[in-house]
Length: 277
Image (cartoon, rainbow, N blue to C red; front, side, top):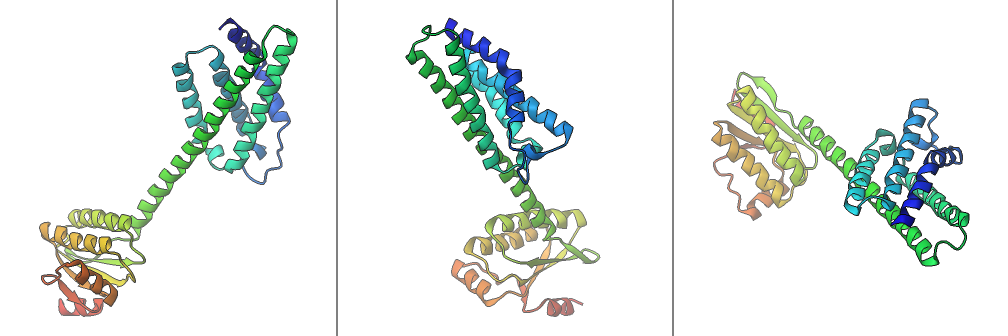
């Protein structure tokens, strides 16, 4: 442990210069990303993140493993979700992890050279293996956390687009229209169901026209969700009229055994609106 502490103290003293050497030797010609930024605030934050990485990594030679991983995980999550790093291609970030890892390999050699013969090859290789292991973990976790964050953002945007693309339009007092356009997958179908029920309740809709003329294809789950929407609206006291059902959708409904017998249907929206005038 004492030898680990000696290495810890040596690396800790080198940390500020490590950050400066790393930034000064960086290829700043990347077409995009944090490493090519000329904004002083971004550069300062980047250097601070790099310095904090050193403080966390060096802790492996002094802290208990559980404490080390907790602190290291916090750095990984914060950096992976940082706006500038989110906008930086991941392979650029991996390149910098590899460059910093090389710095540590060189520093261990420098530390050993100060006291020739004091440390065994087994001990030296153990230190290097520890460094390599933690860099591997950091690189995998960074990639994973960034990917998770981007997926969360994508799902949130997709949900918002689905809600905005399926609005209930007020036609007159207590009468609304839900025009559904485009492909419908299971996720969008569930979003339409939830959004429509809420909109009808908020606007006191008593009759809703659901026009499917802009829908070209559905699977069995989507057809089921449409039926569930009609059934749920009925429970809320909202009567529905379906219009524009294409033959493919009708065929899917039949194959599913979905019974639209009690649902008012017309071939075109214009006919439905005329009949109810």
